[in-house]
Length: 125
Image (cartoon, rainbow, N blue to C red):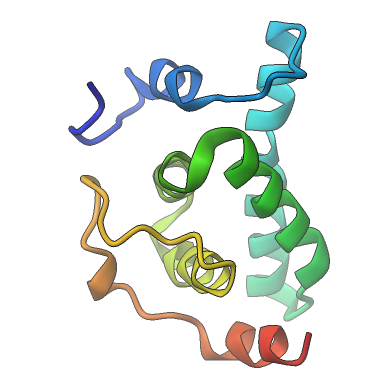
């Protein structure tokens, strides 16, 4: 059903289709989980502008996303909602968590370079 690229028109439908949280009791909880993408984007923005990397907080948000949307769903959501300049950040964290699928319809993941600064910090954990 969702082998084609996601876009702004089908994004919520895609996210709802991929969402798997047995403890979810309301639509509000679904949107709370989906809003983690906003927090991740803010943390990437802060890292890009100040060099401050809140690596454990980013890992926690990304792990929760992969838990409720699955690896492929979380990956596609993160890349769709992130600015292109943050693709390397997204790929680095997903690769570290071994959550990066081989391919997604939206992008050629092989063409995205990982961020070496983040890799160094992650290796120290």
